[in-house]
Image (cartoon, rainbow, N blue to C red; front, side, top):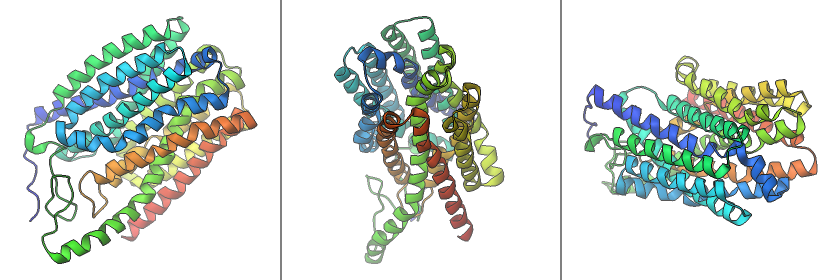
Length: 418
């Protein structure tokens, strides 16, 4: 028997819920990114080589990977808005500790904890965002990720401005944490939905079967029980290219987070203020790309938009690798931000519709596995940079853009064939 449809939600309450989930995404972006423009100072203070720096900042994605599976049971137990609120407050504390850390060990531990909390918050806000999207009856996932980009860009501006004004890193991060932790609590209150429409409620599979408490389908006949493993294997095969597409997207974000400021300041002779705003250029262009992502997808299709995005990423990195001056490098990174804008949202949206999986399973698996890109990227870039130059190491995200374009084209052709 198919699942009962979600109850109608009043327009005003739906609008309030969308505002709440939008604030969730914004807060998540600003809490972490405010520290990133201060990485060069932290690197100098701790006297780290590029390789050591890459191995240190990998703590954040390592923590996220270790904790990715914890999000789903917490969401089912406490609800996505509450998990997001508590997780965001604790994330603010972790990033404040990272800001005042005076040793590599404390910085590493704080970043691991931050990664753990970020993974849980990210899962909860995406699950809740998809629930609000489903109730709204139209795509909003790109715009929610655009709001995350706006939050991350705002954090970058906060960090760069504080660095230019010679504000202590610890003071900056404590004030930043207090403000946005309060916003996270407000967001959770606004984002609440009626009980029957909660994203953590049990849901039927895409095939229409009833679900157990863990969100998996319950077989009603022996035949259905035998068919389920085969359907799951098919679903996982369909999920693989979507996970790889998301990995490419997160790899590009990781390069922007950890290396753009260093590259501009060290290898292009850009002024300190310009170098500090390098991350913001990427994030602002990513924000614009995500704002346009929903209408572009409606017009040309998700696969075509992602394919074009991958090609833009590769093209934008050509002047970076080729040794162009910093204005052209900034333009190139702007293209990287715009091109990568829809890769992760597209992967999440498509994963949510993979047939044969319980509702939410595709999103959870994609969110967990895509973080492997974060785990490998910074150490790889650091090792290549020490062996050659940081410019040469940018061939890693260039290749990722080309791979994303190929995967998107294959997905587009498969969708057309079916």
